[in-house]
Amino acid sequence: MTADYIHQQKKWPQFHWNQDRISTLLEHVRLTQGKLIGKMEALGFDLRNEAVLQNLTEEVVKSSEIEGEKLDRNQVRSSVARHLGLDIVGLVRSDRDIDGVVEMMIDATQKYSQPFNNERLFAWHAALFPTGRSGLTKIIVGDWRDDFDGPMRVISGPVGKTKIHFEAPAAKLLNKEMKLFLNWLNEKKTTDSILKAAVAHLWFVTIHPFDDGNGRIARAITDMLLARSEDSSKRFYSLSAQICAERKSYYEILEKTQKGTLDITEWILWFLTCMDRALLNADKVLHLVMKKVKFWENYANQSFSERQRKLINRLLDGFEGNMTSSRWASIGKCSQDSATRDIQNLIERKILKKNMGGGRSTSYSLRGFKKE
Image 1 (cartoon, rainbow, N blue to C red):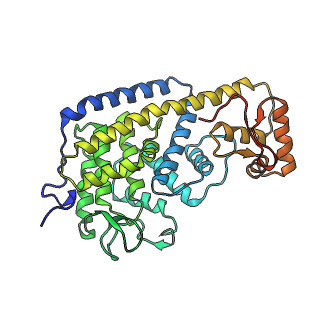
Image 2 (cartoon, helix red, strand yellow; image 1 turned 135 degrees about the vertical axis):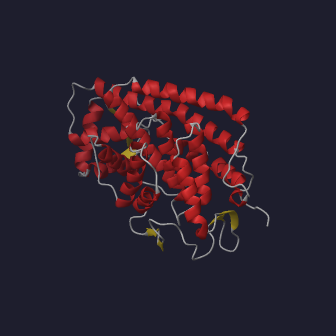
C-alpha cells in the first residue's frame, strides 16, 4: 500500500528536519521575540494590559476568520476583558459561542504551564460548540470523532466536483494517535519550544481528532506552547492574525506537507517566517496603544459623558467602517437626537471632524488620528 499522506508513512510520527537550514531563521525569530517582550515589559501596567487585550482580541477574531467565521470584534474584546478581570469602558454583552472561543484562548495562554490532557482538550472543544452543533449540523462534542458518515476529509469545491486535499487517520486510531501526541507534548525534553509549537500545530491538524474545530484548537495549542517559550501569559503578538493574512499559503504548505515525507523542514521554515512577521507587526499594535494613551492624556482635563468615552474608545480601537450618527446611536443605545448632540459637542471641541460626503452618508472621525 502506498503512503498518500504523511500519517501513513512507516515511521510516523518521527518527524525530522534540516537543522542547518532552519538555525539562522530560528535564532532571528528568538531574537525578535526577546526584543518585543523586553519592549513590552518596559511599558507601564495599564499599557501592557491594553496591548494584551488588543492582541488576544485579534487572536480570537482572526483564528475564527481563518475558518470563514466572522466574530463581532467588540463582543470578543468585552469577553476577553471580563475573563482577564480588566475594567474597560464600553463593555457589551457577548454571545455564548464567543465566550466559548475566548475561554479556550484564555485557558491556553493563562494556564500555559499546566499539563495538557484529554480532559482539557475535550473542555476546549465543548466550549467551542456550546449547542452541540456546528452551524445546523449536530456533531460529537467533547470526544473524538467516530467517522460514522465516512472518513474525515478536508475538501473544497461544489457538490459533485469536490477536491480532496487531505484525509485524516481513521477514527479507530485516534486513542493511540492522541496518546502519542499528548505524551510528546508534555515531555520535558530539550526540544526548542518554538520548534515544538511548529511541530505540534502540524501534528494536531494532521490527526484531526474532532468533527470540527481542529484548526482553532491547533492554533490555541500553538499559542499555549509559545507562551511556554516565553514563560509568560502576556500575549504581545497574534500569530493567527498573520496566518489569516497569509491564509492561502498556509493551506498550501499544510497540504504539501501532509502529502509529503516526514522531513518537515519546509513547514518549519514557513512557520518561522510567519511568526517573524507576526512579531514585527506587533509594533503596529503597540503604536495604536500608545496613540490611544496619548489621546486621553491630551484630554485629561476635559469632561466626557460615559457614552462619549465609549464611542471615542471604539474609534481609537480601530472602528471598522464609517462612524455615522445612526451607528453612534445604535452603539451608544441612545436616540438619534442624543447621538447628534454628542457628535456636535465633540466637533465644537475639535475632537471629532466631519469626513468628506454629506447627507445620510455623513461620517465622522477623530482629529489627528488616522486609521491604521
